[in-house]
Image (cartoon, rainbow, N blue to C red; front, side, top):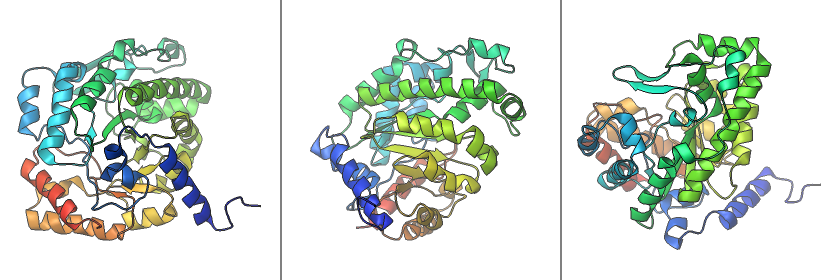
Length: 371
């Protein structure tokens, strides 16, 4: 017998009621903000919008700060990281701020040697290529070496408007494992997949250590003042659905299940539309969609059980304003006026974009979002 009626919508309504009761009540203004209401699939006065990589190289305000320090110093200086986080939200007028940080510093206290090489991006100098090397990867036991992250959260939260949520984030276990094994960005993930296929026992051990570490990391952000978090599986798109189900889904789901149920979690996976059906099994409150996915089809496939986020192609920001406007309106039309849509790009803002185009996008969404 079903407790809440025979129709699946009964369970969905119950789930949403539960979320309304337990979402953080930091302030009434935060609870009733556009982003938080949309995350609960509640009606909003207009569609909320925030933008991945909204504090980035396209903003002159960001570059003014970045010109004084290295990227990693910017990440590890709470005063500067807070400044660029706050400035991006203020300049763009978006409905949420996202913590300025990077996916990879969590790997340093776990035993990996990380460097941000000029012109090369992040490099791991001691990648994990064998079972024996796995012994040097340790579960994160405390935030001592990463204290700059929660301190940045506290500084940002203290200065943000009362109705603007702060989003934290982390890399998903597979994406972090890929960096740890490949040692840098990859097109084919030869080392990662070879490790995964040939030694599933060692793979399980690595993924479990990452799950425990990321849980601690995200809880520290939440405790410091984040209202929601996004988990980026930026590299999972290289996998087939069968490989994702066997080697990734159990660990990512374990991470999602470990987080406080009262905090909205955005599940963002990019690169392979064939994995979208599996996102529902992983969990989260908001499904982040990249631009390769039709938003209307994806939301329907989730049975409208979750909010959705996305999913404008980032290249749209390089077009003229009339074209940008039409492409944004197409996304809004795909959402169908249904509560629970958070507008975003299908991935981060690219360097070289005009800040005026990003501001225009925000205005277009606010002017034409569901009312």
